Length: 236
Image 1 (cartoon, one colour):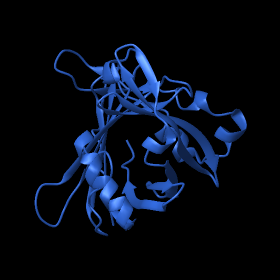
Image 2 (cartoon, rainbow, N blue to C red):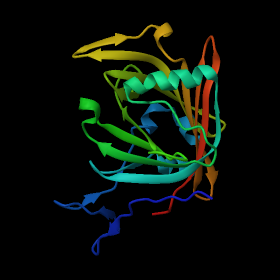
Image 3 (cartoon, helix red, strand yellow):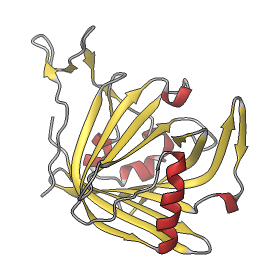
Image 4 (cartoon, one colour):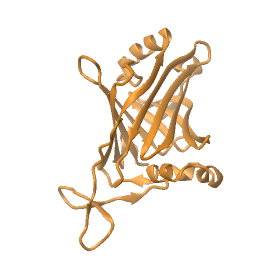
């Protein structure tokens, strides 16, 4: 069974608020309403309480939460494999490890100036172990900006607008267009230059476990990549 490791806060002797250690001073856990603001009251109310807590956890700048789990489902077509290899020129934002049971770590770090922006965001670092060689490391940044209010920045000026919906009590992030930023210019990428429709689903499994599922579907070539991993989070 997958386990979770989280940087746990210390409790202040004079307050019940969680306090995170820092070299300069203590930093406190903050309430995060940024994801909540992107959903209607009705949709937010359909999510399990555990998902509310998970997506309302905002750390002070630089603090990190680490989730540990393993891949339980993975499928990749020939076209998906070639696309993932080609994407290595952009830092390798797509999965390159296609082994069930592969250990995976996801670290979420709060950053007030994510990707050079001032709107704040979260840096996501995904580490997936291989049977041999170094693990694959994927960096991206969720920024609360753009035409939908949320986008995923993968580097090299490329970002993907995201929409959030609630489907069967799960939170689903779906791509809503890609763009290239050159200085102050924001250039939408034509659909034929994009990898297809990307969807990431966060589903609570109870008992502190949750599943992240990534699926990439091309309008012409069908499903290219499907990867699912189960994580466990410790109660703080």
